Image (cartoon, rainbow, N blue to C red):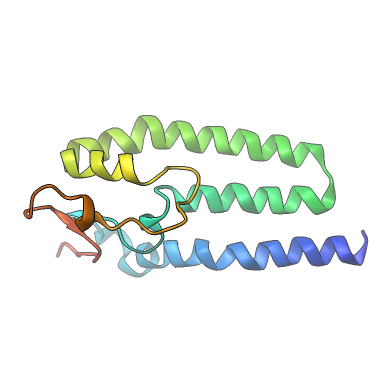
Length: 141
């Protein structure tokens, strides 16, 4: 492999890996007690609804580009399709049941698979002042 191709792939991985860690860190720290009481729309979730899934697919693409391996592109496509199906048919219905209108407004304002350029401010689009949005993580004891 050429050095320039290896450097490009390494740079892409190092740029994307911190985003994955930043999203996973609250889950790792809280263990299995973490259950949101309110819809959390802070951090990366103000720009994209599925940042972990996008980071995984971007990492696979980051491996496939410099290595020029078509099988890795196919693997990335299959992984992306599985993650999309899980988010669409498992996660989104649960969020809609749990958070109702707040989740609907978030889903309309924040794209699921391509980041917004500007972070979404839930208070700017809230129609009532009793919104259940939170940018904090609450722990259930």
